[in-house]
Image (cartoon, rainbow, N blue to C red; front, side):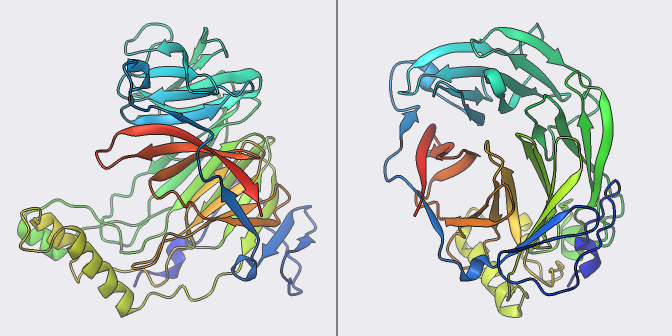
Length: 404
């Protein structure tokens, strides 16, 4: 088992918190001397539910002759104020906008190195006034467009990021939060790399380092070395550091612990959202279930799909975490709610998203009942994302979000 210390969250720029030592009951709030509100909930014992509409409000990308409806590696989606939908297509490096009923309206960008063009388009954020920020890789940067498709400017001050941001986003004030993984050259499953979060001005200038969060350890097994495979692995059931930013909120957490810290647009820690979750210990039965599931997914060792790399994946010498991660994804919605996706354990049905109000109180459980749907953007009354068919063909869909 890996050491529990690797899951500790160390925020270099955040002050220490002096918490009320009295027990907190479900859904109660406590405020410490620094003015930081700590909200603790018990979602496992709550039946508050949110649901998605049975049919999508809009589908973009259905079969047709219009090539603007063909997508390959959708990199981001966003809802504009008039109900139109922006989509970044990674293959063409185009920003496309569609009406609320799915008709193509305009296209901007494209592959190239000229103004408003992309070496590779990646991710999308919609700011007030329908200003569109689209990530450009590689190196990392942003192209900014008006809501009518007019190119405004490039933001090149973050080009020291070779890869796309590892966590973060663009706030409503144009401040971008960009993340990178600090390297760990000790690949013996002991020394974690680091998620480094930095805030940059609307012009791309560095404002400050927000956090340095120990992330994950990695290494190789004796079997991979014996087979001559340079396959870098993380321990089984590893948790990792996560961050997201949008509206006026920055969310930072580590999947090891059931809590997320929320900063405002002035980078002040304002709220800690915590929730109770029991029974996370990893057992030998869990490890067997993972290995059996992996074997089945690859068709078994007699399958033509099986390789030495697969043997390394289920190598008994691969380290295993002592507890399951509490969550695997976090997101800040357009209305500053927090959405958390709990970890899916071997053999379990997909877990439900958990929603929290801007004040940190628990909102609801949200089951994505459409199995091929991947949520991309949460709003007050909608969820926008991507569906893929059995051939991997992608479409953009938006469902109505309601609370029961």
